[in-house]
Length: 335
Image 1: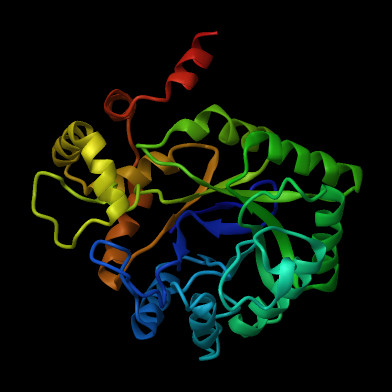
Image 2: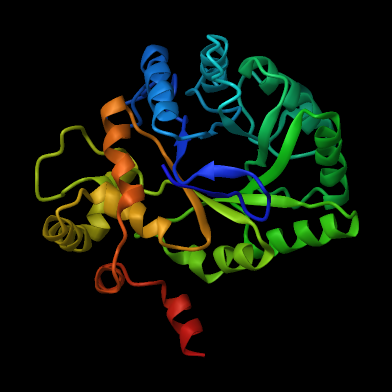
């Protein structure tokens, strides 16, 4: 495994981050995300550690409809087995989404952020995770109704108390990152160290805003949905071993020609589609780590190959031709 720094911090994390969104989730209909049982989740996490993956990502809402928080509970029970599991993991979780069995009630249960909500949600996450601290606490979405003075008061308090080490964001626009860091600087605080964002070969729009802003500010980028809901992990010319998610099916309807060209290129390179997709992300200096979501130990082990692949200039150009940058980015490069 290879490692890099998480943004401007001195924290070193693996170039692949283990995602846990499907841990304990319950499928609602055919083609939706499948469930990863607790037993299988334990195997995947053990295999990840053995492979050198020290960076795990979760959220207080992961676990499936009606069972939000289950993913954190599974991780907590895995930690409780001992064997230095907790000590070896850089753990990130999230706050800000609303879910059924929220610890809060009344109007403050609604989606969003506040000092009131953050302090209560961190305690619930720590309890589910069976730990006394979290390395990376991330805002799941921006809340423009709340002032940064309030948010930094909440997060600084968690850091000072030892319950959290670093603060990150998710789904922030460039202007939100700039405002957050400006407010932190006024308080003489380090601010955000990471931003988790949706980005992949089929979604290059973040290159126009969030990614260049994050890199300029020294914020590391972690990637959710690096394989476009699984579509970038399959050869569309062959029968799929498992059904595509509904989201992936919709993407395929709009991008079949590109996907056929992509699979042809991967066959020429002798590599799996998923690994080329991840290697392309890892070649971007703004990217700290894609968040991968293997459903089995075998999938995890196959994905490790992506860290070793170095794409040459010719292959990068071919990928740009198959998956052109967004029109906005093309116009920006011309000016």
